[in-house]
Image (cartoon, helix red, strand yellow):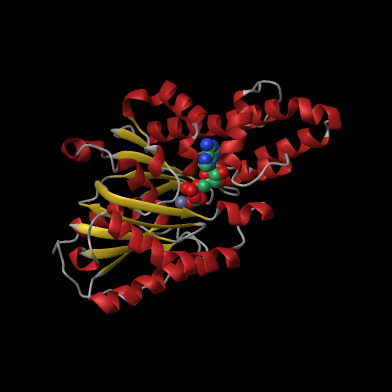
Length: 344
Ligand code: KG4
Ligand code: ZN
């Protein structure tokens, strides 16, 4: 089954052509980082306008790279949410237009769930089913969601962040320290030159929701340390502060996964996905703790991309009783900007 995937939930316009959920024929990503960088974060109105000018050439490029035309595509998968509503609307509206023009079915998919499939694209098909049941953590700029999965389309939400997402905390700390957006890669490289024990950081554990994540207390601790440093110390100790913050952020992830494994001992694997999964220190800490069961995405599929959208859509289609269904066209779906915690 050949799917064209389209992603426009935030600041990347992406299109990809993927066969049977794992053979990526093309994956094109146009990032808006340079456009938003002067503002220190994403400006939703600008993001939507950028998607509008980028979407047609990006899709054309993805089809060209795959040496296919629209007639040869079985269906079109598109991010339905969560994300910035103006950005989502550009992708969804464009895809509805494409579907009307071509008669192809549309498969709307959840962006956060799709991140998990970004980590699974490269898994060999013969062992794919053995991955489940699995724990899956999506750790990105918008979400820190932990799921228990019985199968590739079953997402049972165990925990999420009660405040800031992990990547969001990286972005906010980077902004505080005077660095640009996105903050994750900058903090990672500063942390490499710092001492993670140089600053005390709080451990976040809420009594009755131990599996839940929280990053705003950690962010506030960084703000307090920063405000107590002299101008000269700010220069000298920046890297230490980054290292201590990053270490505490990832220790929380390790603690929560260990706890979730006690609650769900049947898990065959631990899947880590999302932009923060690109961090080498996180990878190292995860490997030290869960080596045998760990699945990490290739760097190509950590941050937002459309291959993960097409891959997840394939598994959704495959799980339907009348797979592969040729239609009918599904054009009445709506986009949603916030995460729907009840989705399954
Ligand atoms: O998955 P993603 O591209 O977009 C969302 O769906 O949010 O994730 C972007 C987030 C940003 O917050 C960025 O700072 C973070 O991922 N990130 C990192 C790294 N690379 C990207 N965080 C920590 N270390 C990194 N190397
Ligand atoms: Zn994302």
